[in-house]
Image (cartoon, rainbow, N blue to C red):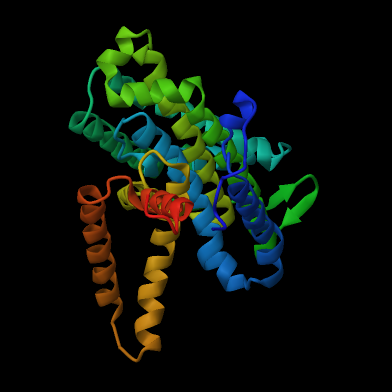
Length: 354
């Protein structure tokens, strides 16, 4: 009887179209933000920050970008890792060659560079779609991997091919503690989630979804496929590029091109599928699942006295991911976010059967 909207009257269109129209949802979001910004920094350990929370937040931002393209616009992409690499190397070179720039500006410029590259590789989507578009974006992944491995300018001509990020310095303050890195990622991901949620609810988001559902019908009613598809690639790649810069500067600190290989692209696609296509919440649920599952498989069997080798754990991880992807594609294509929505709907009706 707690989760009920009875008595919550909406007297304006703005109230009716709110992101969280139910009071209980707004209270829950405020509590979650309070725990994330106040409770977690006060209680969490360095291991929790570095192994779980920071990669979870960064991958959530990358999943938001990919979900905009795949879930909302219906354009399949297998080159997400390459676009993350664009953001990482763009941020590195901008910070190296223009050291007086604030790192926040560097991250935004890196996202802009990734957006330009995303638009370039999104041009084939105007003529091809489905499997052929997936192959085209896969070609982008391999081309970008080759580019950053072979062209020495991007790595400042280092002999090993690996680069090290500069210090995280914002407004004269150097961020080196795990708590500071976590709060930095949390602030950027919160802003990204709010911006993405409002984008997909607006005119641009509706044009993306119209293209996704039936591009011919969308063109007939006045939606331009050129503008809709390329804007989806640009916005998606921007979020992915910023997440790539964060992944390199905050999480890895030192990296090489293999850090953004095809496995990273598949991992992000799994997050979107398991979490839920066309759902911002699903990006967080999928990222949490992908981040926590390997740690769970490593820790729980050992705690129960079941010895498992590293190779066995790795095989189990792939088997579970594959089985879950098949399960969600067949049983619940909208993923964990849909299951969450169904649970909320049941609570709104409970204890009544109708």
